[in-house]
Length: 276
Image (cartoon, rainbow, N blue to C red; front, side):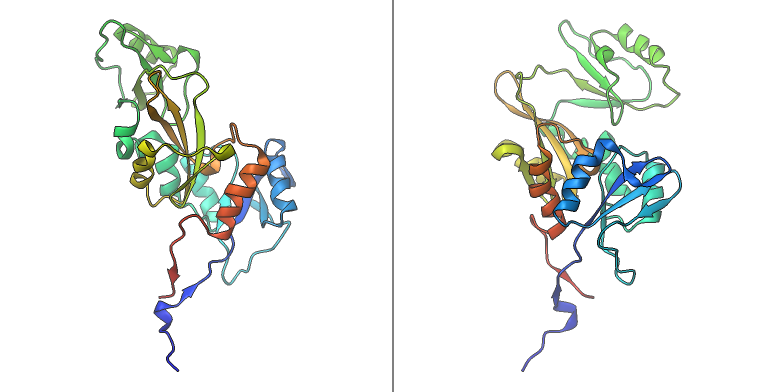
């Protein structure tokens, strides 16, 4: 009888565990914002944890980890700065390492890879000259979040005023995008797990944007916001880290059954692992 070399044996990875933020200084009480998803995961038997970032404490209410071979942990919660995510990575064996988190969370990490599928954009660290031809508009945001209603600019003076109005520190990087009118109600959020885009209520990622998913490999988990222009052309609005993306049109039950369970079970394009 021939046995397969150990280096070629496929093994089944340990199921993913999910960690949610607790209330400050209350490590056994989930933050109310994340309670519905957390309770759904627990009810379905998924391994869950709570984290108190203020005290570097983790509470494990179900399926305590095997310390010899800890299961990978996926965070679901509030946006974290680079320093905060590094702190979390020191506490737990995160499935999404810090560099990968930032590559999806910040525009500098994903724009170049998908530039042909989204709005023409640039990064500015000072109010340099833009093409402000008649009728041309720009949408200005940070690397992660927008600045609200005053983010649409039509002149160079507005850009200079914007810099002062927002009291931006020296060398702050702004993400300046061509403003494109979108078809009302057309925006959808897809969650991508190991290269497979999952849409709510049977939505399918447009064929024209499939190449964007390939360009973003091998990220484990991220979100894609997709819309249509007024002419019906599919366009990628932005990329986000899936761990800190809200559900938008998804229900908790659908997100849990399709996205969390796929992550937990290692599905959606998971490549076989080998023992070295």
